[in-house]
Image (cartoon, rainbow, N blue to C red; front, side, top):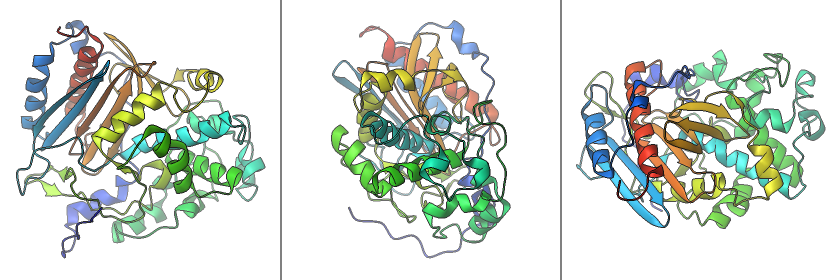
Length: 396
């Protein structure tokens, strides 16, 4: 599809400063204390429009929101604001967008599909598949990478990496050498002893998948994920451009909003957060992924061995983590999915464990704990209300 040319202008100072932490998805895990909204009943579907309109008009709120609810064969699209402030065009389910760390679910899908095919094993180690990795990391297993208990240092926290991004947000990294930034560092903790979200985990997962198959990760995505789930508008690029049409992402603090859709090249995110997709494709993905359509029951059972841990940013309700999948226990029931955060975008994808009901919830600004904890709390409350509408009986 055609790509829009980036504007010929230098990046504003505030964008350059944000770029130093943007690829790192600068967020911290929220407390798992339920939101105050938990005492309220499930909303009627007619309430949902008003809630996202209020979110758009809140201080620091996103210029646009689009949510796709798929329930037992019926699709409801709820949207507010605009996809592009310059034209006033409304959001569409077929708009491209950066999916941020929900891309980690895709690397999980690739790895687990290979486990199902006996090309990888969950107890296989980095040392076995990638012997050139630092010896201190050799005992880390694929399972520990998938549930963020590996202890791998996060390459996006490295000062040299951040300096490169700050100086040139469009810098082209060798995606397969991103872990070199932290190759001289020991593990943060004994593998399996605690949970700590790390972008390095998903880079290592993709490298293990390539080593096991001799196939580039991008091709594995196409054969093991895109094709089985009929994802026609999903890709993993190396540059900074987004195919038209797309949801423009904005930095809204301070005003006026600044378009940061193409602020960053994604070679520095790769398997951790570089995928571009659409709300329609993400709906198909999460229904198949959470519903276990890509691999057999034994792998699904292993994937759903939950431990304490929250996605970043935290999803609705009480969070726990499995293998490249989070469990969101809301006041109305449980959904499985992932969240993501990137300059200009905040994402939630979730579905019931059988995949029959799903929610894709996309907003066009970055909302997280360091930027605006109150707005993040409000977003989580709205997301929980959408989950309640998804799980309620039709017509309520």
